Length: 278
Image (cartoon, rainbow, N blue to C red; front, side, top):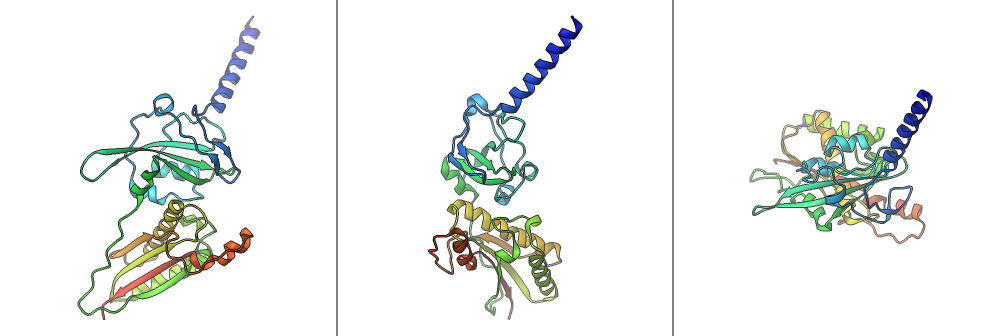
């Protein structure tokens, strides 16, 4: 009898684990590809599937740092664990409920979905309603304050392909040659006594959605700023902005993806403007 009870208990434990492993939200996106794209994006029902129905008020700067390639641990550090019962093993979707305070008073509630590739790195991001993505847009920063007699800014352009792995934007994604270029620039800024401000603008090519590219460009600009500051450049007066795909330098129509990516390389860049008093 004891053996039967033990066998039954083991079977029950296994069944429970399997049910949890397969447990996900009641509605999930359809036809998720290996590279983290959904044929049809489906958001879960807050009333039925959310364990934290009231959601959270996220840190906007942290949200803006989310970009393709982040891991689950990195996403957890930025915005916390997902707010729905997503399951335990090899989960390809995380869903959140975010609240935002809007001008004039009031709160806007949005659902946010992250879809992972088979390596469990985030690759695509979605909002419900879609206009919630606009809440992440940072106001265009004003030009740094300068004296009455001011020189035109010194412009420095760095290839994003030399700075980052393709489609990546985080500090861990900086390439060795990119770090060397930023370290040299930081040394130059550290030694300049007349620097009055630095503006860092990220740019992408047209591949991907406009909102995706805006987030990617801002995340890259932010990473460049953070590296410069860590390397000793003065943080005061340093500003970042993401321009996405809005200011291309070249237009390309190649049919083969590899050829198109190569042609669009000049559009993937980080521009740095150094303002100094005359």
